[in-house]
Image (cartoon, rainbow, N blue to C red; front, side):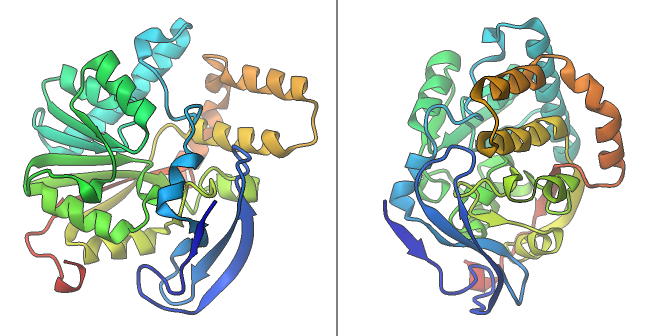
Length: 319
């Protein structure tokens, strides 16, 4: 395994850091040690020692949990209902934030294509991109979607091609988020909208789970963004009307952190399996609704939804 080290902040080029931590892959127990730091100037949190780009695919195996199949293929009807509800929420976010019912959309990190298949069913012209070969194959074979394997920065999409670009839980995985945001800016038309979902640094989950928090997910998450840092990045990449809202699906991010903790806890394997089976059981999340109502109300839930509109001019330093 090969690694690289960053000697300055990828956002502001500051070479002074704080809060240095050595960390490991606690979710999948894949090899390697990594160093997480925080920039003293802008506050960006990032992996200073991280896998080489050519090696990163090894940390996204076929059993990586976000790679899920079609909703129709779920065994349990309650799980199908829950996933359809989550898909409905995503689509409604797009309708509301894009202020249109139809258009052309690109989903970055499209995984197995469930979201854009849902958008296509509602009349949208859809495209997707993901780095995982198996996920892309599923999206093509199961749904017949127009999807591509690779890095957004290497794509041949046309400037101004899209009304909406979405990136659900993706920006923290990218090697150069500023370049990714500038590329998205270029791909959007003049009325285009970017919609992101990211882990919430201010969430109660981070305080509860600490190093097991899914928002860290070393080494797949190369960055952790505070609201201030994210707002600054979007402005520098040429976006305006930046709105940061509480997310949805808090139970699933909460559950992901529990699974990481269990993966490293000194508990018998069969007991772990029983606990996960209970928490995964369709409908069990209803018991947690009062808790998530509280965290949503105080904006300390696990995720944030961010929307931003395209400015026609991008600062020259980021072109």
